[in-house]
Image (cartoon, rainbow, N blue to C red; front, top):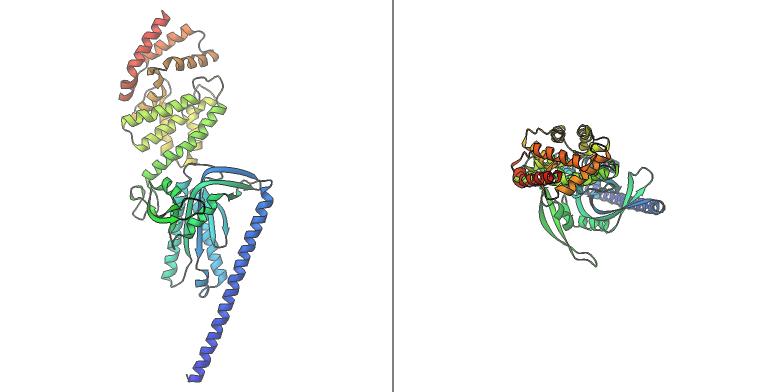
Length: 454
């Protein structure tokens, strides 16, 4: 090629390059305008709907924001429409992962995806839920990046920010599934995300304190905030080895699942105790919420002394929570009804069929006359009748007398005392802990009751 032709070709290429750059700049500006218009419309819509919208306040919610970037870098090699379609597919997968961990998608704005745990239904595990979702999202995006690199293609870069704090949820419409989040927490999570490195999950100190037991984290630095103390920021790497299925640290193992369910149990307990408070017949002066709480407490106490595992403790506490829920419907056969409740409720809290079966065996072990076979069944029976050997035996037994009298099962205090003596003499504690802590007191109760009968 002659020099003149070469110079002409170079000039044409430079001209084409300028045209492409102008087109790219124009596309980016138009894209920015569309994002700004979308944001403005969302804000206007939010103002209109907020006037009549339901607003819920949450003391603890965890927000995750993922920013994708590098659009201009890869536009030179791929069509914009294909990139947008690819990003939409990524967003769909992120939504599926969010749903898996009971994390709710809030919105997508341009190249950003926002989701949150602990809203619109509060729970105490939301920081862990969001972190598990973030780890799996990172795994998915990293695999897509690797696949593109192997094919010699560019791909989106990303970074994540997570913060836990107080938020207000503005419920939009009648479906209760569409809402927006307001509050300082939303602003802080954006700042946390902004200082994350490419491909990194950055979290605030608040989130770190809630998840550090289960995840490998590294101190990152301080985030300066106006009018507030600087926030410590950490980078999350993976699930800790002790709680992970493998070295990758992407998916939790059974030990993690047990610890998680023990923490989650407080949410379930709040719901079930509230149900008992509102739905148990008013004449159940003994088989009431206080009794259920007492059995949960004693099952844990005896279980710890007897040296049970975390998994066994989970089964005991869950069984204690449900063991009298059947009393809502009837006293006779309430244990079987309680088992039906566990089959209905516990799958929603990730309990496996085998776990539910074991829990139901513990509930049925409390049915009179008790004949426990396993250590857990023995603990359950001792927890259920722990009061027989305690100093508060008299006031507790008075509530049972009042309950049975109203049901016309007993008619007077003398008959009741005779029944108690007979029951106490027949009853036995099955665990070493029960015998050491309660047997002596129980024998004293028998002597006192015999004096009253005389």
